Image (cartoon, rainbow, N blue to C red; front, side):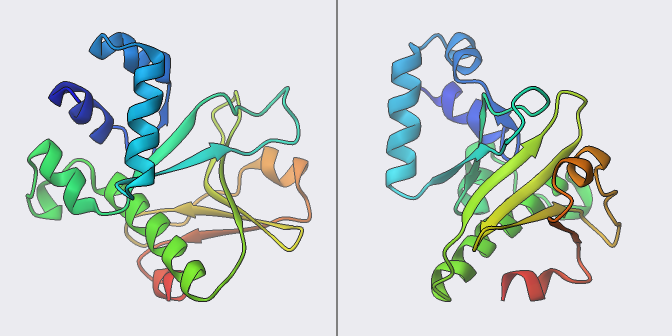
Length: 176
């Protein structure tokens, strides 16, 4: 793998990744990009999450998001081990941490779940959508003690779904 490819991917945690755009930026074939990402998933360096949709007209599912199993690997790739107070990517690190710790919790507790993210063409989004036992749960991750706004399109499209902001005040219940 070319170093520029790894760096470009490392800066994209928690964001949608267009494989064709990634391939164009680093001058690699789309199939090569797909193979590299698949390999990184198989060796537990990154985890992939797809978009959730039951209404394809309003919801975006074309691209996927990727998270690092270990934020330290991501930090090493971008050579940034600065204190959180001086970083401009704290929100991304927080989202990555919560996402991966949630997966570990569910694995250890043997909880079967389908995981997605959700976004609309009007830029409303939810960081993590879980589908468990036929029910939907939406989670928005916020650094600090902020509360996320319940997306109106989510509430309208999925009125039975639960929605919760995960922040520094309540994250331990979410991951332990």
